[in-house]
Image 1 (spheres, chains in turn blue, orange):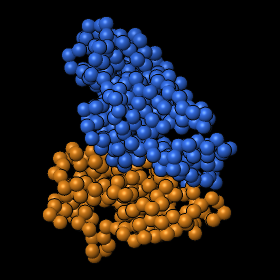
Image 2 (image 1 turned 180 degrees about the horizontal axis):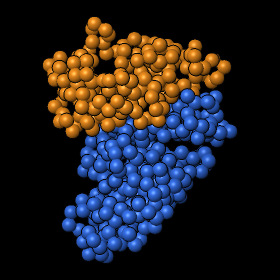
Image 3 (image 1 turned 90 degrees about the horizontal axis):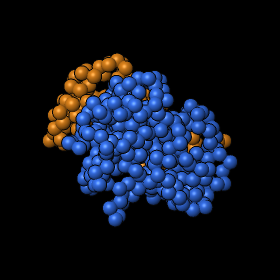
Image 4 (image 1 turned 90 degrees about the vertical axis):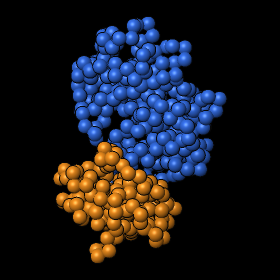
Length: 270
Length: 166
C-alpha cells in the first residue's frame, strides 16, 4: 500500500492539471499507473498530490497532414485499436504488441508514460528516437516541443521541467522499419533493443537501446548493407556505459551488433 | 471503513458496478483498486501477489478490459463497471471457464487462479479459435509459481471449446 497521505486529482483538462501541479508542494503525474503506482508503494516516488491524466482528454490518436498525434494517455492497446495504424506506423505496432506483462499492461500502460520514465531498457524510447518523434510539453507558461532524442537526458532522466505535462507525441511515417529486442524470458524487461528505419530519401539508421544511458543513433546510409559490416560499425560506435540487474554493460555491448543486424534485416534489401 | 485506512486521510466515496451490482463505498485516495475490492467491497477472491504488475493474480475486468488492479488507484475507478472472480460462478454453480479449470486441474496452490480465470474468460468471449501459441501469449501477464502451465493451457483450450455456442 501507499504510505503517503496523498490527494487524488483527475482534472478534466490539461490547464487544470498544470494548475494543480503548480499549486502543490509535491505533486506526481500519473499516466497509466503501471510504473508510477508501484513506485509510490515502494516509496521511490513521494507525493502530496497525484495528478491523474485519465480524464484530461489525452487518450486520442489523430492523423493530420501525414503526422500522427498520439495523446500521452494512449495505451498500447489503444494505439493498436486505431484504424489503419498498422499501415501508418508498423514500428510502433510491433513495439506495442511486444510489451512485457500481457494484455493487462497493454490495456494500462502508455507510450507517454514509458518515454517519461526513460528506462534505458524500455522499448518506447528506442522506437521514438528512431522515428524522430517530437514531444509536446505543456505548462501554465505555455507549450514547447522537444525531439525525443533530446528529451532523454540519461538513464531514468527526461527533460520534464517542474509543472510540465507531456500531452502529445508527434510521429511522421518512415518508408520501412524493423524492430528487434533481446530478452531471456517472456516476463523480462528487454536487455538490448534496436529499431531500424529507412526514410523516403533512402537514409538508413539504426537506433540501439539498453547499451548506453540513452538510445544511440547510427547512420548506416553510407555502408554496404552486409550484416557483418553493420555488426562491426555498431560495435565500434556504441560504448559499454549502461548496466542493470539483467546484464552488465560489456554483455550489452557484445550483443549490440547482432541485435542491430536483426532489426536492419527486417528492412529487406536496403 | 477499511482495515487499511481510516477516514482521516484524503478520500472519497466512489460508485462502482461490481459483478452487476452497484456499490457505493468510501476509499482513501491512496488505496489501490486491488485493496478496495478485497477490503471495502469484501470480495477477497482477487489476490494480491507482487504489487508490481508482474504476477497478474490481481487481474480484474474494468470497463471490459483486463487490468492489474494493483497498478490502479481505486479513486480512478469511480463510475466503472468491474468484474471480479466472484462474478463468474459459485460452488455448485461454476461458470464454464471455472468448470474447465476444474476438469483440467488448471491450478495447484490456487493463488494465481483468479487472474488466470479472468484472462481465460476474455479469451473465450472473443469467439476465436486461438492456437496454443496464441493462448500462451494471452497468458503472458499471469505467472504461476507452481509452474503448472501445461494444465492451465489445457484448461483454457477446454474453456474456449465449452464457451462456443453459449
